[in-house]
Image (cartoon, rainbow, N blue to C red; front, top):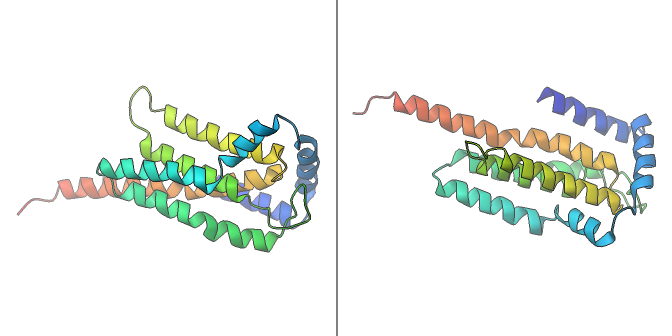
Length: 196
């Protein structure tokens, strides 16, 4: 947790203070914009749209609720609700221009944040135990990375806009995991409580 906090703070500081990482980021971003087939990069960037990512999370929350879990779905919903509450004020405060425009409000990336939390929380809710437990987290990482790649290649965001969002959302994804620990500890303690 402290590592993610430190990386997010470093990235935000470098962008806000026009530090050396920002210059490197902008050179890399300019070199990457326009690479890749336009329909594919547009599709990848669209994976971070709320219309795409939120239904995935809603299905995962619904499935988790059907399986009798309450706290983990609540944590996932709270993590998703926190995205605009954190990202929008940061965008206004940092006021970073985009790669292809002078308009501001590009750091951190809202699409990258939406993808990271929606797909990451879905993976946490759906990951089972056993031989195939690795599949959901891998799918979440691939979808989140694909979104970030699409955003950068289309010129919608600089690379550090995406990375900053991922660092922030890594912290938000601790909510569903922490709420799962709370529910398990309550189940354990209530199982030791004698019935009347």
